[in-house]
Image (cartoon, rainbow, N blue to C red; front, side, top):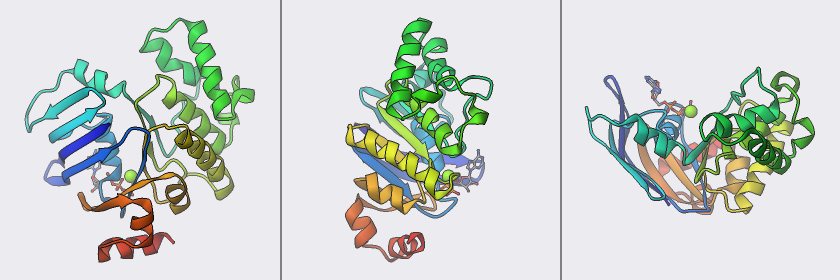
Length: 246
Ligand code: ATP
Ligand code: MG
């Protein structure tokens, strides 16, 4: 289980997350939706601690970290929690001077100190899973956006994270290439991968998310099953926003 309790994040005077509490069940897919600037990316980055919450508690499986304003957090603790997560970004962010398979192997070899051959085997299996084994030795620049994103998904999954975090994984892609990525994420979801994704892509969210969190101006306005949030939301604000996605 992943638990975010009362997460606040402040950038200077700007309180961007205003006490967000969300629970994510193992094996479930949660979509974070809401207007631009509402705090979706910041919330994802507070799960893998690319941003350190100003206050609140982050729990991933058995690992829990509590944050207090002005408090110090040990780098070792950050690393311990971050290793439980994998992140997929809007613009792929593959290492340009590494081949597809080297991108997937990188964290296993440099962070987890796996022997190269063992890392290569796991990377190839993951490339297979995302339909990219035939491009294992290709350079990122020679791949389409959809292919790059599938390699990025394989890379994020390499250390067997407890949760896959995706920040707008399809929004840099035209519809056909986005569909490849939706299909891969759908397959991972059906295999029980726990995921949290920020997305404006209603097709993606309604296809694979069971839970939806509507985040507006740093506040969870409404959360619940996807069928309810997308079909019959309780709040006017949610209703108006969902209508803009359709
Ligand atoms: P979008 O849908 O456009 O991706 P979002 O919901 O992901 O938006 P965030 O990127 O989390 O929104 O931004 C929330 C707020 O936090 C914005 O006001 C943004 O300017 C601010 N913000 C985000 N990162 C930083 C930062 N590193 N420094 C200062 N302010 C930031
Ligand atoms: Mg964002």
